[in-house]
Image (cartoon, rainbow, N blue to C red; front, side, top):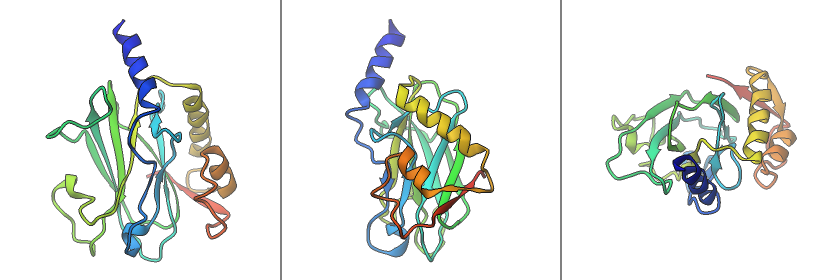
Length: 196
């Protein structure tokens, strides 16, 4: 019964989770740089047994580290005030491309945020302050109960895994993740796949 009610709550969150899969877009080159989670439009994703997730990094002349944070979420998909960070990672500055990595193991739901560390490379010792420069992060919810859209995306990410260190066509990414409006002709036709 508890499992059924948790699956129902996760299904309901797919239409109401207030996250955004595309971050960036404010003034300033660093804060305007696109960062996008490769998840369904609902911003809710079940990574499945592989735990694979992916982040799209937009073009930029000035590169900054990518900060990824995972925080435990409650049944409403929100992070409780004062909740401890589950895990935080910093990915070295890199040009346009896809970053493929494994989400941490979790039992309930976790909120996943990605943003660039802006501000002249001065590292803030507090990992919770990674968005202090004003860059809106990409925010998604990771859940356990998979739906058909999740399984399609899990299969796509598994294919990308075989391209680590190589490239995949921009059009494939745009079509698979409904990002045609984001991945315009100003992007490279081939996107590098990085698996740190």
